[in-house]
Image: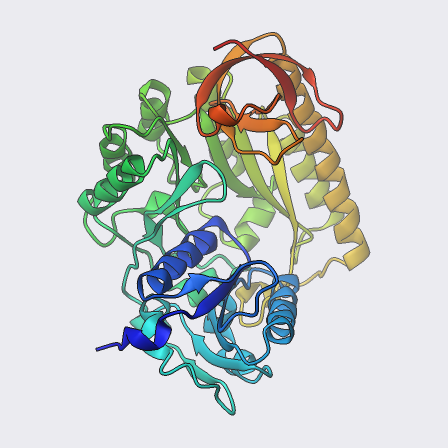
Length: 439
């Protein structure tokens, strides 16, 4: 039994690195602490508890985690410091030895964070609590409100794919999920709290159902029936799990937006083989074609990694040509980072950092052109946009169903409201289309 008296009138700060799933889980941790009597520290206030939710997708991410911990320890002297997340699971002893850290919690332990706080007395050295990969089995639910208008609903965790370059399965464990009934209930609660849009998050959400014997298609069909939620977005789904039935359902659904985020990672089949991906470029191109046939104005974002081991200049050029010919909207480009313990380290031909940077710039420039042309095609159209709160003296922003960012004059009463907007022209920095509110 946890004595919540020790948490009364205590304050906490939260710092999150990495993916949307991490942000959703941090929000749930914050709610857990608030229910125990801990309030979020105000700006400039010294906190009693610091919670850092870490990422370990790249070496740079590891470095940012360490920097964040050092910074919080300095800003909040004497605070009880808890570190969790992927870096904590993969390198618990390294994190525990950082000065000021008290407790390190792995993937299986973070849902029980309160149990590890004790009486909030500082430790001489940090203590690490983690589980072996085979013992990471529980699914911790999370449906959290973002800083703006949308909720993030965690539907799945873990991954069974073990791609050659990736440590996520070791940090998150095997694929597992909540039940459709429980997730629908969380969506209903979000609607009751005024939520208009929900983003479905997870590590490999198309793999939904491993735990419960259900399917991702069944899940989105059930969520589509929840009253009060006007929009759903699928955060990311593997191309081999994006079935034709899912695409067809999104095209005819009431509330799922014509917006897809699909990891490709390379446009070269030989590199995909080295990565141990479960598809080829022909399958990927077919998925894009099917989406565009049913939803010509759909936004399609694509993840790409440059400079992986084995990616020769010829392979990169081949992949770039494939991407150039794809009718997609935006490329999310990442430079390959070697991760300890991954199979990719056994692949010959390492790409120099300077060349990784060059390849990244090539694809980012390609992405800018694709996004600009996508936005340009919609100038003159009238589309509904869900508007977000803005600071005094600044315009409001929001997104159309197909994820075009719009900019309109600030009207406080329109925060979290869907309004029809006529799209007129690009704003000053080409990051949005300026619109006129029609209703």
